[in-house]
Length: 267
Image 1 (cartoon, rainbow, N blue to C red):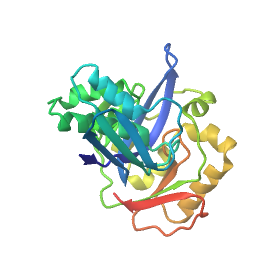
Image 2 (spheres, one colour):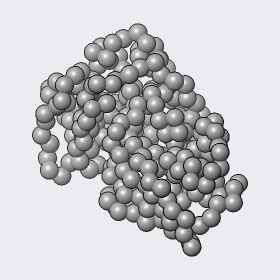
Image 3 (spheres, rainbow, N blue to C red):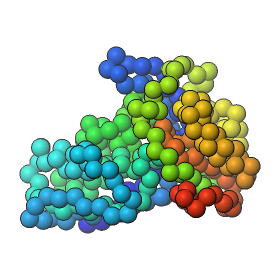
Image 4 (cartoon, rainbow, N blue to C red):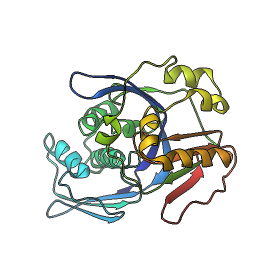
């Protein structure tokens, strides 16, 4: 059985406070993007995970395998062979790894008829990573907590175009949070999305990571300016990674260096 995990972007991201457990309280809006990779799971004589496409660091922390083992701890799953063709850049803020984990859960649920409901899958996904729960629903969602408290977002970008640019700069979550100063915004993400048209987001919808990471990586600020200069009505960093995106009314035309990873499409 094959599924196609997709990327996400963040429409705004506010870091509100640091929690006693060391995590940060945040608010954001997750929005799915049709930049996809391929994930196949089949029964096998032994459990193994293989990959192709973008090289995945061998750090002993394979989130796909963790998702399988998490379900296997509660259900009698057979051994499986899992293959991932990786296409979404790592450390880009696009949620590729989180999507892979969530899609592993849903695929196993369907493949072995576990009959788990969305709420149950979300509970498992939340134990794997902060963004994982979003990909169970995989539709526009407002998120709070560490990203696991989700409510439907009353927003659509259907028919708009998106251009994503990854300059092959990997920013770890630890690095991104190291220079963050939590603060309460004047308007919540929900208020902005409810009260302002997309054409006005530029003035109101912010990603708190940009302030510190633009100083460390000036190329990101330059890329954001280029996206606006090319006609984007809104441009931002996605999550805490180094991918910048622009939203457009019509299909964009913009050239970047050949060593950048660029994806564009219609939402």
